[in-house]
Image 1 (cartoon, rainbow, N blue to C red):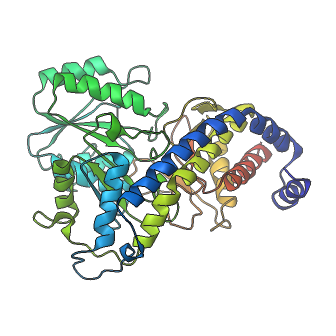
Image 2 (cartoon, rainbow, N blue to C red):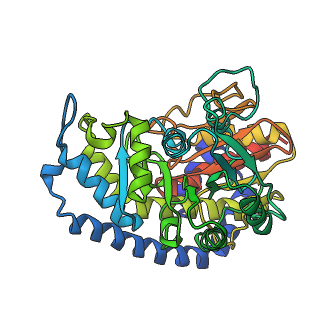
Image 3 (cartoon, rainbow, N blue to C red):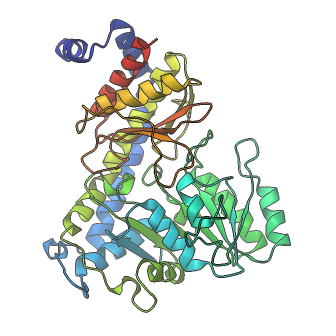
Length: 429
């Protein structure tokens, strides 16, 4: 770090020598990890470039359709580009998905019917899926899968891994299981995210018992962190958010679903209605951003990974337990930090907000956020509201007070934001 940069950080954010010493040690330790992820980034950049070229994308695809949106070539061609990237029969990429949870919900509602069973094999799914499934308060009439007669089963993790023998046993015993849900990322848990190879092994075992069962993977936070995606190793359908990895920090909203044509089509009927599906939907002039964001995504996702790797090392050097470790192979952009103290957690999250380019003046506080069972504190000073590919951090206010950091459009910003947060945390001792 240049002396002038260091001095500016000391003068502006009151970062002390202790933090800078940790910074220098951490940066030295992560060099080999950065080289490894740079090679993945280059591979995925080539994959995206080739998909765009193979679909002959031109200026004419940056359309601004209105009304019904029939014949929107930009929209329809982007579907084909995504299908190439995910190596699938079909894809549905739309700004009409309000978030990743919406895309996941469309995939689930589209492919499950009354008396079918959904089996979650990674333990309890992410908090925002609970209302979709119908977990929790039976008095809430929210139109959940449960209300429509879809049953739900869950198999807890065993030693932080999918208990595949129990999964296979459940599949043999319960012939009503129509869909298996795999969550690639950790959600608000304390485990490593599933690697694509691990997902492939799980799917292989599942299909030996029931080749017809639909394997769905929640791919949020995972795109472009490996040279493969879950659909390359047997997943029937995946879904995610455009304001996470695959939107490249440029997409202003939206989500995607990719997989076998039958399952994507069924999901499209829940985004719109049966008989219409993906044939309608004007795109409000955002197609250029969706294409450009996709093109930048392999690079931006790896900038976020580098931020997470650096965060893991500097927080570990500061005495905190982290998961994954800085030298663990990663499958998503999320870094978990166990604070074991409510105030330490809150101070760190507030520090990330102070290091944001937008709303840095805001003082984030825990609040009752829609879709979450505990109060949540969220640092999200982003150009796109709630975009977790931008530097952000959040946490449920519950023991053992684990914080989850993700994103960073550039490693330089992620690094500075983490230094500010760590300095705020240590100064509050």
